[in-house]
Length: 537
Image (cartoon, rainbow, N blue to C red; front, side):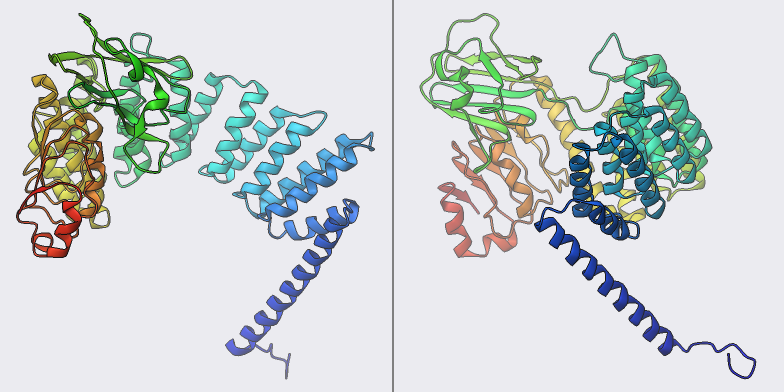
């Protein structure tokens, strides 16, 4: 105060003051940490240690080391203190105070779990009530949602009650991704699909959920929460483990087996049985992954001398460590070969009642696009719905939607390119599988592919055509799955070095015409000649 007026600090003075204040905080923090480490070295896990750690954690609850020290102090005190429950209760109170500082502190929530697991008594229902309280403050705090899923199991809260809680939260705010996610975990428990256990929920409940999600999505078309939930309902999630392809060729002394997702075949406790093949085919320890230096892979090969037995209905089966069996029927196109490929699940196949709902939702999406043609979630969802209804019939329209998304949402252009590539391959792969000749050529040319998916299903094909796409070097590493490929066409792409092209065991010819940067560099040709002798430029 000067001459009756309040003195206002200049920006320079304010900066200097803040700097000094920060220096004092750093000094105090370092002094406290020094003392804490001294006491830790001396194994002095006492009340002073609790006081010092509390002082630091109350302003920054994300220092995991200090929480570890507090646990050590409590465990030591537990050995002598008959009133140890009071200590645990006080620690619960302290974690709650820390959560008020940072409600999304991993460390504080973890400490709370540890207290309840180790305390003589634990009031789990009180923890459920605490979660309800915190979710009123921030209904999208996923840390609290995770903690809630943990404590409701301990408290014995029914799935029905939790489902009602989720519904209440969603109806209050559709933009609640955590609640939608929790809902997806509860639905299979409450409404399982008895007719098809591979599907998470019954058809009747699926119809209701689709109607709910459409209401949510159209309330705010730019919010992603409901759209992501709809994807789950439509089956666009990571594939479950299954067999993909199998082939044995006694003339080449080569066998291949591939799966829908990577597994540790040789050391993961799996059991492989090939009904028409004796010896090493059934010994998982003999199989090798196609990716060097990896123990987990989608595609595995075996070299050896194989004897094929007469078997009217040959099969290959995989039994997981959990006892789940997957199998593929095999064909014998020649005396030297048995082969089989299992059609992957590109999404759920819905009954007519659900298809009618999907068609109505598609009509709503198309209507919305008339008013908001640049709504990215509506464009994407329309494409997803068309794919779920009839991918072949809507194939060209789907690609137009994905092309439009490249402009509407340029930051995710690569995602839309790869999604378009994946669906284009699905379309061609389905036709190839329906033809039933699993050693025949598959033509993936001219599809504007920016990535190559489902290569494990092509492990048995002898000719793979990928001409006139948009493949670059990083895209062709997945071609290592093409174990039986003899002729590979990569002409008209954008390869530069060729170093990523894998060395395939039976490859005889590779076509690389019109990869301008690649074919103009003689030095790079030497790299390719180590992979295959016949290179067509």
